[in-house]
Length: 112
Length: 150
Image 1 (spheres, helix red, strand yellow):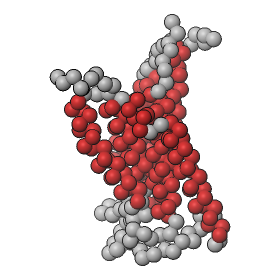
Image 2 (cartoon, each protein chain N blue to C red):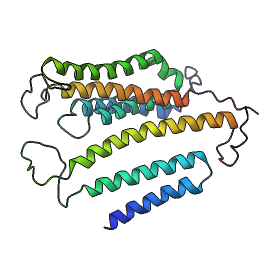
Image 3 (cartoon, rainbow over the protein chains, first blue to last red):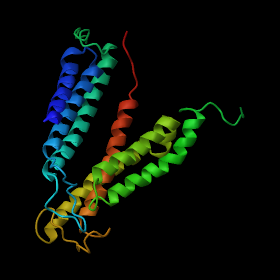
Image 4 (spheres, helix red, strand yellow):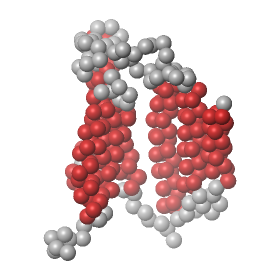
């Protein structure tokens, strides 16, 4: 139970970064922390006490494995989060190129 | 200071020497992860990320020009396209015996390196795609010229 609460705390830290910080890079880091908190929550959710990795090797008992479904899900989520993070960083670089700042309160001039 | 060590791009001599020692090991470890994707944890994506990190390591230590001389942009985009195309071809070849993604090759002995039919080939295609895709993303992010209007 305490690990779930720690995942929630990690998510709240990321949410604080998204909502409260003004630097674009810090906002991106906040979104990444949120994604990692959700991934960690799913992995812990699929854990079984005393279970081993869900890989079928010679001499392994199939009965006592952790849940492989969430691990496949989280692997896909990591790949997608990599792609979205690269996209958001590219947008942030273009914003810096146009405005010369990462501060979101100063990016409202809409210069042509 | 010898004269032959002219001021080059990249980091200091210590970083360069350590990089020369470690880049090959990182590359081999990534190739190991990709080729053992059907037997152990890891696979195409994880191994591809490790191989791409070895390229990025090279670029950080020796500067952009040195890395681009070894791996040109045409080379990178060619191999990224090739990885995706190979994966699609392996998937479509499944129609030869049955349906999409059908494993029509010989399965071999379980838990040996050459087993599981088309799955290691798919992992190889994914590894190529992820390696050059991630390196291309890194290149595109750092190669942008900043022209701040003021």
